[in-house]
Length: 137
Image 1 (cartoon, rainbow, N blue to C red):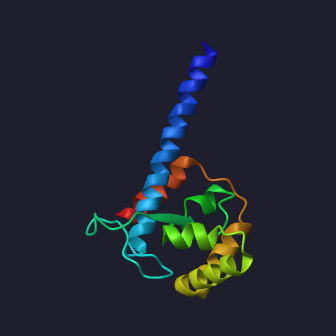
Image 2 (image 1 turned 135 degrees about the horizontal axis):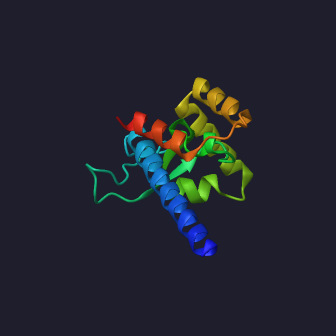
Image 3 (image 1 turned 60 degrees about the vertical axis):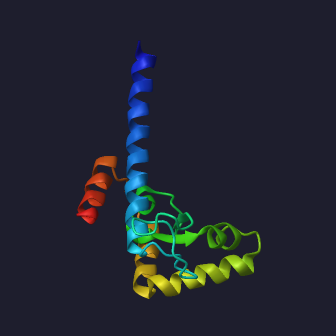
């Protein structure tokens, strides 16, 4: 009996996490005007349903909930810049894209993310959901 209840709770937590991920992605896409922040290519959004699909990318590693769900820690990239440039084994290409993203978000936001990365406090899913709801309003 206890195993069934535990699975039900974790499934609910997983569903909630997926919901928060979706909210985060939609806000990141809207913040970037549904365009790749590196090349400016129009990507799929409400006004461009036939455009290519892009990827939301976490600027700073998403080690904590503070970074994972912070909308300021995301950019919208075309598939080429996300896969070939950001996650490239070629460090020169990856560094170039990082610098383009840093230029796009500005020094103030970059420093904000550096500070947030140092923040080790745990945030509950309820806190995160409330913040995402506030941002989408």
